[in-house]
Image (cartoon, rainbow, N blue to C red; front, side, top):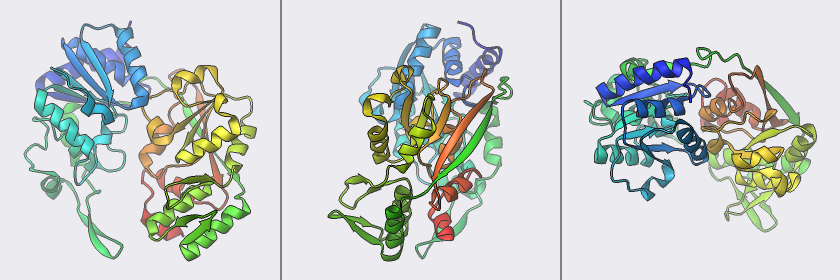
Length: 406
C-alpha cells in the first residue's frame, strides 16, 4: 500500500521524535489517517511488539489497517476497558488512540492510571493519537502524558503542583461550597508540548468538505410536558407504580434531559419510553435515505428499535452495509469509526460534552466528500437547544448552565 504524501512526512518526523524523546503526539484531525500513520511509525522504527489501545467499536477498523499495511511487527488491539484482560510479555510501542480520554483532572482517571502502569512495567515508546488533544481545557494534557518519563511536566509531583505554574486556579460555588476550578489551563501547556507534537488539519490534507447543520423541531407530547412541569415543581412524579425522583439539581437536569427526548429512568433503575414522537419523526423524515442515528440514553435505542424494527436497525458498523439505518450511542460512536456510507447524520438527542459534539458530527467526512448534512431533532421548548448553544462554543453543558436557563 502507499501512504499519502503527508503521512510519509509525518512518519519520518514522528519516528525521529519518538526515538529521541520516548513519545510522540499525533494531533491529526479525523479522517486524515492518524491510525495508519501511527502504524507506519511503528514499522519505520523497527518495532517488534505493539499494543494499541482504542475504543471497542474502532478495533475492527484498526485491525483492517494492520492487515492492509502487512508490517513485520506483532500487534495487539484492545479497548481501554479490557486492558486488565491482556498480559503481554513485551510491549515495544504503546499506541494510545483518542488519548484525550486520559485527560481527567485534577485527579487521574482509572484509565490514565492503568496506562501509566503499562508504561512503567514495559518502558515502551509511546504514540499518542487525538484529533482534539484538549477539547475542553488545556489542563487535560497533564494526565495524558504523565506516565512518560520524559514528558515536559515530569518535574511536578502531581497535577496540583503542575497547576501552581500552568493553571489559573479559580473558585466556584457548587451546592453552597467553594470548589477550586482547575479548568483554566494556560496556553503555555501546549507550547511546552510543541517539540513532541505533530499537528495536521483536514485543510492541510486537502479536504474540501463542509458540514451543514440543520435543527428540526417537533412538538413535545402534552403528557410529557405535564410530567416535566410537575417534576420541576414537586421534584417527584409517580408513573405506573414507578417513581421519577429529582431530589437534587443534577438529577432534575438529567430527568428533564431524558424526558425531552421521550424516555425516562426511574429511581428503581427501570426505564420506560414515554413518547415515540422523535423516532416516528425520524423514520418519516428520512424515509429512503441511508442514515446514521446518534442517541444518548439506552432506552432511546429501544424506542428506535420499536419504530424501525430491530431487524432493520444496525448497531454495529459491519451491519450497516446491508441496512438503511445504524444507531450508535454518542460517546461510544463519536470516535474511531467512519459513517461515509451514510447520506446524513441524525441526532435523536444531544450529549452534554463539547467533545461529543465536535467529534461525532465529523463521522461522515472524507477527502472526496464535498458536504455532509447533520440533523438535530429537538423538542420545542425542551432542554436540547440550551445544550446545543453551549457545546458549539466548546463548553460542556453543566449544572450552572441549567440553573441559568431553568
